[in-house]
Amino acid sequence: MSARIAPLELLKLSDLLTDDERDIQSSVRAMVAEHVSPHVAEWFEAGTLPARELALEFGKLGVLGMHLEGYGCAGLNATSYGVAAMEIEAADSGIRSMVSVQGSLAMFAIHAYGSEEQKQEWLPRMAAGEAIGCFGLTEPDHGSDPGNMRTRAKRDGDDWVLDGAKMWITNGSVADVAIVWASTDDGVRGFVVPTDAPGFSAPLIKHKLSMRASVTSELVLDGVRLPGSAVLPGVKGLRGPLSCLTEARFGIVWGVIGSARDCLETAIDYAVNRVQFGKPIAGFQLTQEKLANMALELDKAFLLAHHLGRAKEAGTATPQMVSVAKLNNVREAIKIARECRTILGANGISLEYPVLRHANNLESVLTYEGTSEVHTLVVGQALTGIDAFR
Image (tube, rainbow, N blue to C red; front, side, top):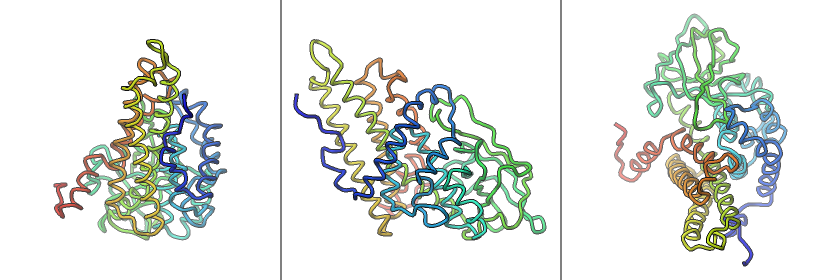
């Protein structure tokens, strides 16, 4: 046997990262190896997550809102955030979702569109993991079409009164603050909602078969009264929430590389050590074809994510580029997870191995923050100039 090469080193892809980016990758990998990986299968099986404890650990590491400037945030570049997301999701997509919702949805919304008072009140505590945020856009009847949301905010004197419901909200039941988007007489507006406000509740969603190591909730707003200062003053219309989703999708583009990489590395180790018909199954041509094809797609996904990261840093990234990357990388990651499960055979369905856990999680990643169908239509519109959404 000759020396083995790690899947992402076939093209020496680590050479594309700076020394600082590699140091961040190593630090996040070490933190995840200590605080997440030894426990995540147990959390997944039990359908629980010690979200507050993990938030504090990620806060100590400086991961929460790490790509934002000021207010206790690290102010690092996009690719640094990307490699951090990759290492976190190599443990579990649910953990990466917790971090992504905190930094790229809730914190980003406040950072980009909030008042100085809102920023000072929430961002330092959220960066430290002392306060957890969630992001309320999706509704029970309106996921891909948020423009028809039913959650409503009405003026009552100087106050706002919110009524409605949001669904599939990561971090909802443990959040201290919710960024809630609602229809108003002046268009869609965002609101900074403390979760201890009267009339606000966040029931936990149970019986999930995916993202089990994640807090997923419904948000119920029943006459929630907020002061006029609760509105995000910096944006009106769907541009606000959609720009936040574009920010968060960038983390998905990188994160799924981590889950796919973990599946492929697991499958390679298994195939090298699993003996059938007198030799390791890694020595059979059909197995090597599977491994080679998966490695090619994994490396291409990294190149796509890296290109998007550098474009984001240069200020040239577009929403269409994010859609291309999200569509491709999630689609290929779930294919890799499913193919790796075949290499592990019956062991592939066991929580002793991460492969089917990753595959189950990726079923959620495939449809949240823009389904594959929606991103396909975004790409189609870019190519043809014709809107096929309606």
